[in-house]
Image 1 (cartoon, helix red, strand yellow):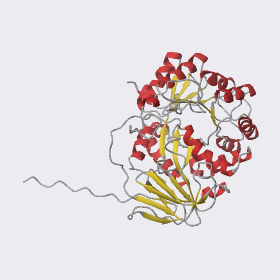
Image 2 (cartoon, rainbow, N blue to C red; image 1 turned 90 degrees about the horizontal axis):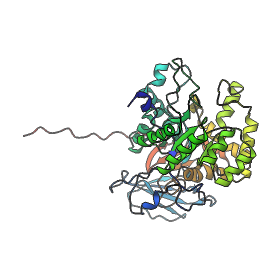
Image 3 (cartoon, rainbow, N blue to C red; image 1 turned 180 degrees about the vertical axis):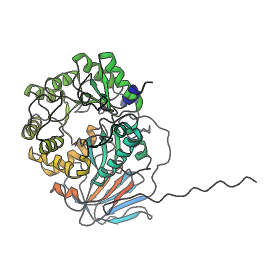
Image 4 (tube, rainbow, N blue to C red; image 1 turned 90 degrees about the vertical axis):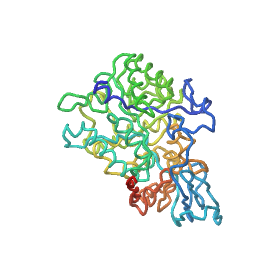
Length: 464
């Protein structure tokens, strides 16, 4: 396999909602109906069967005395959350005390317990300003950059991220290390490489060598677009991400291939390419880029989802005064115009999620960018409680993991955040993250990342 193909093995793809879901967009191969409830699978959109075994997390954690925002749509209420292993075991009314005798009990009086936040648009290995080309292309450096970013996200109460373009094996390695509990951080749902046409978005941004960004897989022609999707699937992609430009035949081939593999497709597209992508059956459109009212109506009709990501453009306009030098951004837009796109999509009832798209060194601004994105939704007409439900429950459903994440209900995976305040009333309180649990593992306590001391393994005894 050539180095260029290896670099392309990572894109953005997710599975589909259960058959018959009100949010299903177009008919496509539905693999989940061939799985029964007793089959254990991976906790990601791929749902790969795995052998039965003991839980990887032992013991119980009890969060007592706080108010619980469970993400289901119910108002926050006094309650106690019981976690056993890596699952929510119970949400008990005040005064109830039915939990294992050896449980670790934490008093969270005066604080709010809520589901872990989710970010639908990240780039974990993005190079920083001033970095040499050698370091930018180094997969070792990229993995360490990703590890650093994971810490910033989990410190901000974000327990799941969807990486929608990183190079080579990097996002998949980070995903495995987090899942195995070897490093602290949020769950990683990886796309791998971004698939785009020759000199399409991302491929027009070249390093001094003339090569496109290391996270890009350029494709040409329907058969090559199909092959690019298969490459991402082979590497373990959870979602397929495509970007304009593309022909109608190319995007149709990519969507058809991804859907037959059981993966969702999200598209970084603009202007008429958005309509072309929606007509081809993509599941989600990234960014608040220009589109016609006809296209927005078509998105609503086809139940195409959206991840608006207003905050990166706010940063660009504030820092640079505009988006310059990109052949994939040949249109006029602004902070105000982007917010208006969000409003127009809300008016049409389009289902939207929260993502930040923090490239370069912008992750260092966290949690401010995530809060800014939430506040844009409030400016568009959502209440703080509605936005918090989008950041948790809706985002989990858009990941195709609504049955496992996004709410505090018995049986769900234990991704839990404790905040000193009432973020369902004041979103700014999300900056006061006190405790984070991901998959039943303590990740943050008193605002500090938790890395447990290692348990020594006995050295082998000499043979008699």
